[in-house]
Length: 219
Image 1 (tube, rainbow, N blue to C red):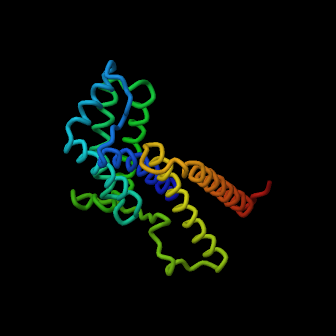
Image 2: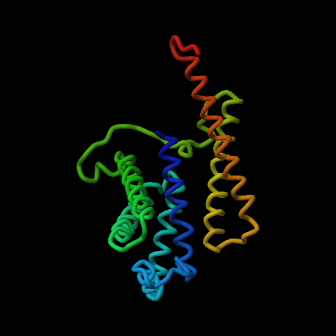
Image 3: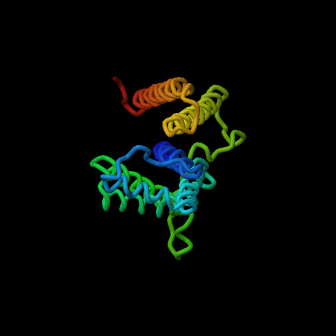
């Protein structure tokens, strides 16, 4: 669950930061989209609002950036939630095709899950309680990891791979938005695929070892 939450936070952050920065610098979100369609007319009017267009982009970028760090993840999710809820309603109210509305539904569901995951931090405000305890991998300083040397090295290695893959994924989305040099696209994609492959192999090996070590576990 901790790994799933970390991946979910990362995906939602990647999904907001590049589109948000596109608005901050004043670029069109969907250049070339024909105004014959409702979505095209909406984006043209939205871009023409100027300061409001920038404000929405800045809010998106900040919400995504806050999700990247455990200490600010709840604040990021709370800021993310009304923005993605508004986007979700918009994509269903205006003709955005068949795929985009469902993607926004998944993003809304994912953000809601992040808010519920951090219920122990906000439930007491409303007089409630949530007693489960959880810590994301990036919540543990290296000095508190009491593992054998090899295991501790592997833990730090996985953290390095996580940040390397995340930066590469962010770079890819920025390139696709025209916010970074196109020449970086191939190295960024190769890095993302490489980190994903290493992660899957390591998780698969971990699952294999767990299966063999469980009581009576034999292949």
